[in-house]
Image 1 (cartoon, rainbow, N blue to C red):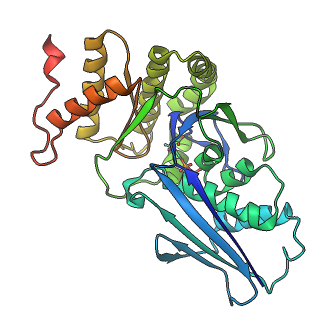
Image 2 (image 1 turned 30 degrees about the vertical axis):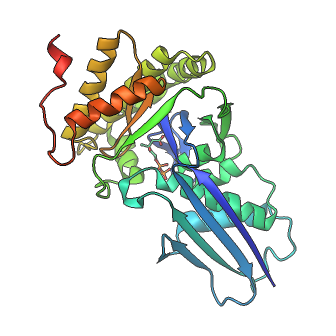
Length: 332
Ligand code: DP6
């Protein structure tokens, strides 16, 4: 007897960053966060799960490689799915799982693969097991940011106080602001030096700036961000997005020992975006960086996307490296 389910889940890119856990076991974050889920025709994870009595053990395959199914995160997810399950074989030891997951983008590029990955795993398992619990809370136990991939469009992860209240909520759906485009600039595809989990743990331990950010900066910024999105105010949206990315990386630099995720090319892209916005007279592009050097640009509309792509080609032509030290209209 076998059952099979296949699902896909999107990558999400935060504009208000999650950095730091209040509870390491339950993945309760220090602050709420907010992201957009990318269109699944571009970046996504596809996961198939099979439950059957003809396998001898559980197996997990990620992008063609066999991985450890006994990891704490996977086991926590499985436990909660079974707790919420309605099928009669849920605790039958004769049933084994085969999980096969692939990304349609390079995993090593540091493009939030754990977010789409755990989200997809939880969703697929929930279909298989007939699980009725809040799936964003279960995905959170896989990887914090994964809870936000449970919905399309603009999604907040409300920090909450406990397992039940720390969940993702859709702020606006994928049709709300169709003009906005997202450009992922892969600056480097080498695996990040400090994982998000380790990095944020070090920051929580050593950075006073992070405590201040979580307590005094993010709560107000979350409300302003929701307003900017709901009113489609791109200028304010971009301002808040860039400030929050800067604030997150300042906290990393304030960590002991300091963590630097951005590199020279990342900083060049920041100044290119700043100069471009200045030149056009209002914010049409916003940069944001996660735990790595890759830039994600949120762009107001197609016209500015085309202009930005041209500029990026002039300054970062891959065949010639960084061509110019600074964007050309810096001195205008
Ligand atoms: C910088 O969700 O990967 O991308 O909960 O430990 O799995 P764990 O961390 P993870 O951290 C993501 C951090 C970030 C910001 C964000 O996506 O909000």
